[in-house]
Image (cartoon, rainbow, N blue to C red; front, side, top):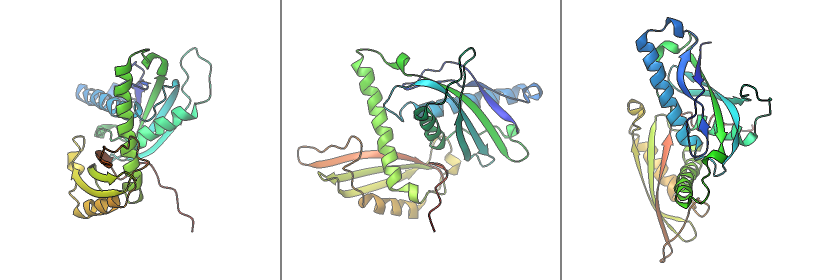
Length: 264
């Protein structure tokens, strides 16, 4: 199997330093300048997409290293996300912190990556990406910088809200296409939804994969109206006891990873 190795560089993120840049396949010596350019562009896009989610999954600032292994098929669907220890040169081997492993895998299954260059797929239709991740929470913490902390927590809350809505709606019946669902809700002080609008739109990353699905939109509206938002991260009401808000959920058929089999 051909493997795209994500080379090690320092790329700052709010929660982690993601080591990923300069993709080079094992067949790079046979690649044309145009192919190499495409690989480099894919590497940058892959890094940016993964960092955007990994940095906001957890409110904790963690330290440690982990290697993420990703497999993508010819339909550009993520089919495999696993982690393994990543040991820096000259450092002793240590077990992977389960918190880092969980963050890396969640980011992998919930990130829409750019299209993989066609020439890097194996005959079996699989491309494998190996990405070392370096989490350095201490370097991200700026003592006394309340504004930086506030901005980061806003992003953490938005991600948690999106995950909450996805768990309550699309997780049980994944969409067949790729896009965004924008929920606009009104709820009472007890969290009971009084009204909900849902707008579906294409992702800039994969606009060709979007389908305007009226049935999906109707199902999401119905599900939203049945939700209780009392446990929604950041839930708050105004002086009249009314809660309003907007939540954006990115969806794709493989989001969240393989679903566990239900007992017979």
